[in-house]
Length: 183
Length: 440
Image (cartoon, helix red, strand yellow):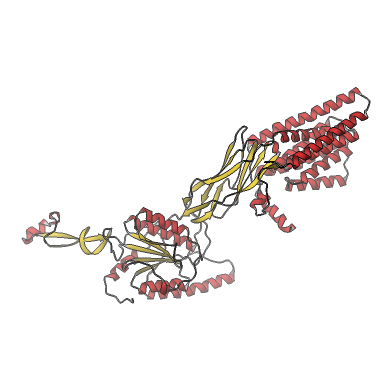
């Protein structure tokens, strides 16, 4: 692969991007910035190393949102948030979940077709509703975890083993589904 | 989609496959859940929840069967500047929420949308979707509408189908004939009925003479005033009107200048093709027979003399298939045009090759009436000084060639639309009445 030619080809493709596509890609950067703002507002501090890494991942994601870069960006943002915030169980976690899912959705929207394409407003509205549903799910999980913490039940290894078993079953099921050949 | 369009060919399965959004959501939800459970951090489950929801719904709403694609053009033949629509249809699209078609943009074709890419949302419960892309051809010729690909995405962007190639569709664009009109008669009308005044007298509308009555003359031709004065019956005779044959000889050996399509700059071949179309249309509408020969081509690019609307269509269709520099050199002495005496041969050429000059002189030597229409664009120039000097030298050589052509009795006129041929045709008509020496 010739890096120069690949860069030129990518630049050519991006130069013809529609305005909507540019807005969607810009939204990825804004979402990343939003996570940092939440971290700082909740009393967290971010190291320069992690900031640089996340910014690099964000830039690459804005350029190639349909590849593996978004996975790296989302993983890095979740990691940075987890190691920077003093209280993980604060309600701000719902906001972070919304921002991460928002970045994920923006990447999905930019991958529907070539950069020149303009998406229907019907589709954008559908994704807005889905985003609301996903954030609601996050809020429900947070409320459940808050209720459990309020009950202050003693920790149980059996519960942890069952939960890990569920995660393993889910992983196996997901792997089988993703690797299956579909008609 | 764009990777396939830009030439990076890759193998794509025919069915639905998990898209990057589903893979991403699945991986993130799994990893976050595992870490949350292992380290007892329920906050990470909150982060995982939206991705888990996306993964589960995406898997559940997986499309059950692959769509079947087809595409067609509303019209396969257009005039320059006219538009049509390329429609791509996907059958069995149930379960998908978005379909996209992307075409590779080709020169001289305008697309709507201009990116030649159109996506459309597939409504819930719909099993068929059609994605139209409007396109207009801006230059004559036979071209592909562009390689295209089609892709679809399932609900929640979970599964992707394609991108798959669309069959290329060929679009024939007939030249839009330039404006042309001629008031001059063709020098040698040789047919039966037509609009050109012949040398003989007969039924017609143009006055020839008043002569004594002979048996067979019609009574309505009797010239009563002269008959009363002279005491003998006299009749008005008219010049017969006959049709003529025009052969268009198109030089497609070279193309000079840049073509900007209809409404833009015209190359030498643009001028030649549009002029040929205009001349053909004019003479066919006046009832003459017109034929076409592309210089150098032997078959497929020759239309024998004929008349009527169908002949015009054949001529325009042949003109649309002309390709610059396609045909090799041909020995002028071996050229067989299959035209009779009296046919007017109109050579449309920038007169830059020895071959076209030799062919023209050979035709004139055979006794045919030949007119050269110079199709060289007047504003042709080059930015690079060396090329500009070389071009000026070429023009000097061309002037010498044109002089040789004119010395052999062939008039050369620059194409300027209506009236281009009037003066030379009148001159040739006068010359036709004088005796001359020809080589056979």
